[in-house]
Length: 183
Image 1 (tube, rainbow, N blue to C red):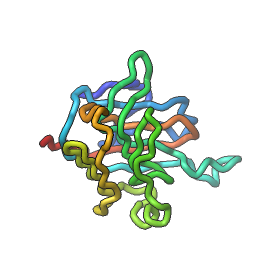
Image 2 (image 1 turned 90 degrees about the vertical axis):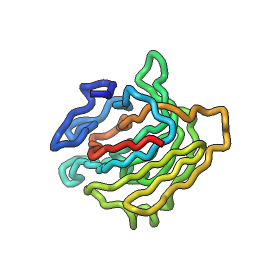
Image 3 (image 1 turned 180 degrees about the vertical axis):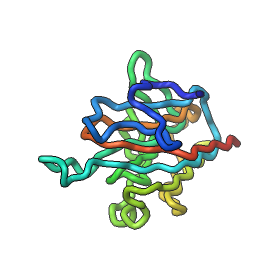
Image 4 (image 1 turned 135 degrees about the vertical axis):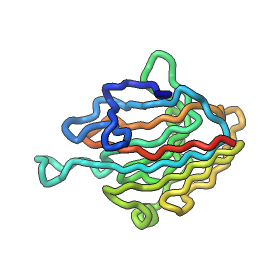
């Protein structure tokens, strides 16, 4: 309840929201979004990425698979399954990053060696995402990875949350223990 999106691309399993599958490629980007819009908040959740066992496939999968994230302060693009707004990245090569979906701006990218020290591969990772005014802060497993202040005052600072998986090779992103505290 309280979410909208392509329900064929999402399921509930073991108390978590799961998007994608390790049985087949993910044909397109998918987003499960809140119906409610948020402005100033603290979002807490756990996230993990599952990928196909490389020993069971004929050709190795790309290192970035699966790729997805948590959309914040985002808007649906009319007449499409696309979304516009900030994305807190999740996936093997992107944990802890802040990206601007559909405006194609990398706002912050962690160095691989720093990311690899923080991420619990194949296990639950804790995210805390705080937005207040133009400021976006992100903590991954207790370590701040982003402290960003938006310079473009024309960009919307209100929007939905969305759980996402990118189109691409087989893989799953799992999300659970989602709590939202509004300021």
